[in-house]
Amino acid sequence: MSSTDYERIVERMWSCGSINIPTRARDDCPGEPSCTQRDYGERVAADVLVSEDKAEDSEPLEEFLLCRRPGVASGGKAVKLQVNCVELSVDSTPSEIFVYHVAMARSNESDKDESRWWRLFPRALMRRVFDAVIWQYEAEFGGVQVVHDGTSLMYSPVLLPWTAQTKMFRDVDPNSVENAPGSQENSQSRVRTGLFVVSAKLVDAITTKSLTEYYSNPNVDAMPALQALGVILRCLARQRLVSVQRNFFSIDDEVLVPLCGGTELRWGYHQAVRVADHKLLPTLSRTTTRFYSPNDLMTLVTATLNVRSPSEISLLLDWERRKLARALRRIEVTPTHRNDSKRSIYSISTTSASETMVNVWGKTISVVEYFSTKYNIQLQHPNLPLVNIGSKRCGRENWLPIELCEVASGQRTRDLSNLETAEVTKQIREFANISVESVVDQIRRISFDDNPYLDAFGVKLAQHLMTVDAHVINPPEVQYANVSSRPVDAQWNLRGKKFVDGAVLRNWGVVVLNSTGEDIVRTFVFNLVKMGDECGMSFEDIDPFVVRADRNCGV
Image (cartoon, rainbow, N blue to C red; front, side, top):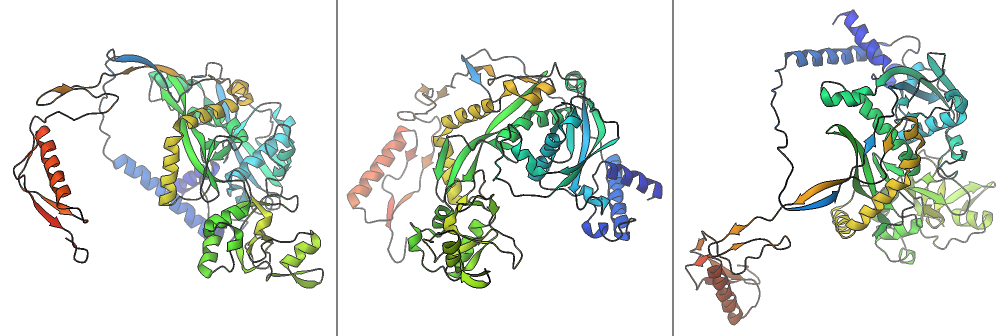
């Protein structure tokens, strides 16, 4: 590979942020690219060239035509059917949507190493940082409503009034957005973070005409506009609802199903934009997820240990302690004895609250004595272990009694076992109609009629699900040997009907697995042969061989 090809590809990928150089490569030489950096970039560029060569040498794709629908059904019963789509109009959208590449770094790291700007933070933190930028630097945006995809792209309906090629925002505090008017964040719901530096650079302008041009010319690339439209539609839902990947749930919704183990089943919806026949349709599909119930942590502990009350827990065995540690790991809890933010559980103690010693006030006392002296709280279950909400590092633990913790709301549970999956499936079937009403209520809650982001980009959505014309096709008629029949209420009744070509059973027998009497066995054989004759299935041997199972030897 020539140096020109290498520089061209690496420069192109670096400019769009698609190269993620390992940390070991970044920290070798802060001033110039290290050997590891150079080798890594050459490997990435070589892979790109190989992929391009393979694409050129591959066989051409086979083209085939798909027949269109011949017409609209006319038979059967005409009905109105409600589908999981809403009507969308993009007639008032601006001619261009401007795309900005957003990068962020912590304030104490931004001046040390420029490669830190390409490090990805958790999406939840990146959204908070971006919301804080809009809140703290509202005047810099000139009143323009912008949206963010949660990673690195920002969309604006107009060109932002920035003279510099790259706009810098310094001392961005993600916690400042919690006090913003209309914010859904609770001041106690987030762990405090440091300050950030954010940069925004104009990288592209998407033509919205590609959405309508795609109908007549499928070769038009409408994917960038569809991606921007999806981000715009999900922006307000991410602020008002709980997002799990691309699914949205309402924690304030009263429609829920309590499950075992301190959990509950909630309904939400998944949103996506699809291209239909000369129209765009946002689809809203139902989805379910199991959340932890916002109750006392003790409820989850008793369910994990399979006991009725905490008084039944005396001394935990090693396997019980490991089981409890796995169940409580990474669950966010809120202390009840003080006003504090929610914290994650990292581990549990190997000793009970009465046996765990801490160094405070220049002396060593137990955790039970500490809470009794400082907070005047007498622990009801000093025999239980403590949870660590401080840190994973040894010596920086922060031990808290289980009875003084509450499970924070909005937390999805981990993978389900086979029994839990069966229980969830059963509840979904029983509450199908309720879940539909819950999803429709959640859609109304995100205020499609009063959505500032949709108004800024000129997108209009209907307030109700679409209704289409459908036909209930007449059930088929099945011809038997003696009669023809149709199903009634989607059920087939084979009583009194004979098969046209019935099978013949020549050799068969009966195995009796319990102590059933001879008369009952004969009656069973007689009725089975009689039913076979009525259905057109003949038995040549009406007196089959009967075998009884032995308790010790089997059959």
